[in-house]
Image (cartoon, rainbow, N blue to C red; front, side):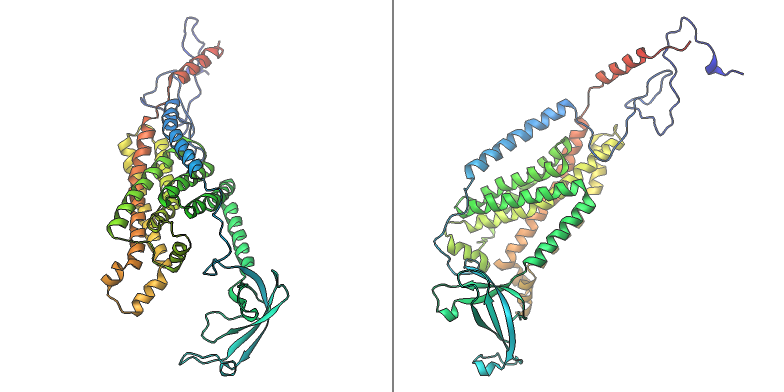
Length: 454
């Protein structure tokens, strides 16, 4: 018994050989969805790993945007390269600018504060601590001295604890050393190792690349941004150049060199430009000096040529860069995935669908940024609460206003990056129309090469 497909082919027929039937799950048509008898169905798989290759025209357009930008950043890096931090004659002995050595607490005994002449604040009870400290590094290694710890001190010591001591060579012998901090190198290194293992275990190769990008960011910060600012270069210009280098290296190393990453780079660049303009305008309008804490005052005292207001704006730019990376990459990836799922959709439809994702991202990211700044300024907020100051007095004081400006400017840049990057990605994916003629010609050649059934 024979069916229609078993009939012999007619000698004069020039129709193409019959293709095996396709299930709906494997059939994918572009443009016109009407099938033709004996026609060829064009199909491909949608992967969520590597993005599909962009057309030659799109690659040329992106190259025309990214290459000049990268070249300008490279030129700026060469012109502003500091060649190391400026050298100073000795240490000032103020804050972190003092000579330090390693030491170890060898013994701790409790003594009455009155017996050693230590005055205790009223209402404070408890004995004083007399810690014997042995210097373990430096010219006086092996030397011991006694450190008195009053009961109202924020830190107490125990026998065998490693500490950091400040060394004042011009002071009397009995006053040359004093404990400034504890040696926490071991727990910090262990925590860093746990972090790296967690990133690699979850992210695998992408996690390794993220750690490489993190190391590069740290090198740019310590070898270029900080020394260039210390040598008197404009902090804003240094932050723009250094931040751009960090952005380019981080994004391309972590996410690969492709059109999707390039669109994220452009979106991040536009958002950074907006943050810089808004930050400059509102820092000037609000008359913020940037000199609001002991660290900034110390930097200004040691290096009077540094522009403190520009340093504030540079901090806003660099602080916003990491979160901008997350937002722009997420939105670009969303647009690319939506476009792959529905290739025939217009750019408006793709944009609206991606913005629904972006709105959820905005809410979480902005809240995260605000809480991060609030957590950093928590001791300051406690001081204002203790003083029972009004909300307006607290908010409009320079100490808090600086943090508010820093938070709101960064948040505005983050919010603006979502529609900007989404629109840019939607337009790019809609304009990416690969030439179908080579594929069609290849398909015709393959059909001709197939043997006919007899």
